[in-house]
Length: 492
Image (cartoon, rainbow, N blue to C red; front, top):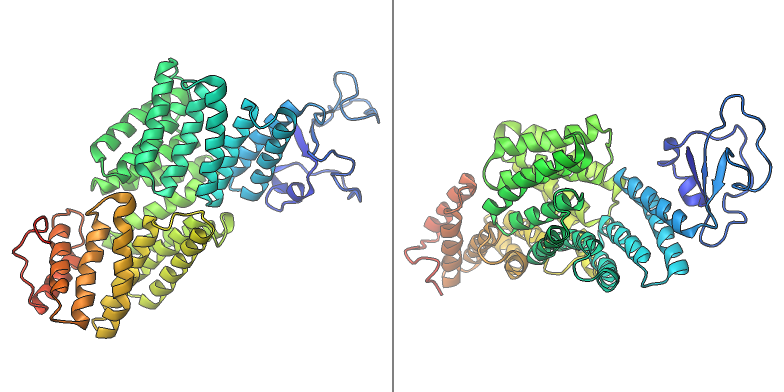
């Protein structure tokens, strides 16, 4: 069966065309959209059977049963359902532009024929929220799914299954906004609905909601709870899917790797990431799936911390950046992350100029998205990049480097606790480096020793803190003649 869509921009996509069988030898001079209504036309067609007679020249769909095509132009409900489902499939294949056009067309159909308050429109709003999420416009994603929630709560009540589905999409957008407590609440509410309806063990959204919950718990450093969430999630996935060779299982396995990494179980995390990559790119042949990009990035970032695998780390991080640019585009928030991830590896490799350029590029992308209101101005991505820029400046060990780094690190310290809470490793590192930045400029400034001591004392309690960073901080404490007898908790 072939699906023919009266939309030339989709039909002529160089990425999409290879997925469909070739047409006739000649090229029609008539546009595919000729004569189609504004909402577009959808035709399902099948190849003629061998030995079949000539097909009627009448209108598609007007022939008797057995006809080779069926025009759904006058069946908006079914047309929109097919367009939406095909759009999601294209998103999963890394074809954001093509998938987005079909999802947006389905939404327009449903709005036109069913109105703004119909549950069918709510279904499209869920999909459109994902489109905006994939584009990196997290604010627009939240607005769309909140509209879906409004419809679903009104039609189905507070405990209807469609409400849980929208809460899943809301939680995903909130995770990317850095609103981890909100995402945890959305996922928990959705899971309670599935338990209330008796669908917890069988509904496919159970594990999707558990995944949102586990990712939120990991980000909030609730690592015991996060690990238990994934240990209950993955067996449900396998039971529902009947296999581990499925993109849903691969996604959840990769996200479990993040939890294992945070717990210091690096070997287990590497296995989880590599197994997920093998499922995506090897078994499933989904070598353009957006989640594959993020798994390359996560694996590369982890291998960065393993000296014997540093070269391999760079390959994965470069692959994530290259694929991200192809699929997501230069201005996408997560491409900013890919630049920053590669820059960290370049820093480790001694390529400081390359690292500096990478962080500048990442911050430019984040700033652009903040101006578009697609990313919150206090997002921790920004704090992390500012910290790295300040770190590189301070490590020049000059007064000029301290002067350059000080405003970057002060800004980072304002942002770090906004989403992640106080005393994260990133905040403590920025605090220690700010103390050094001040000391390089004003050796008699008491703020310099206070910040350097506070940052150092907290970092040395972190089992995953870099020994090299701790050695550097101890050297600076000695050089600046700082006494760190007072505990961080009691310092003013």
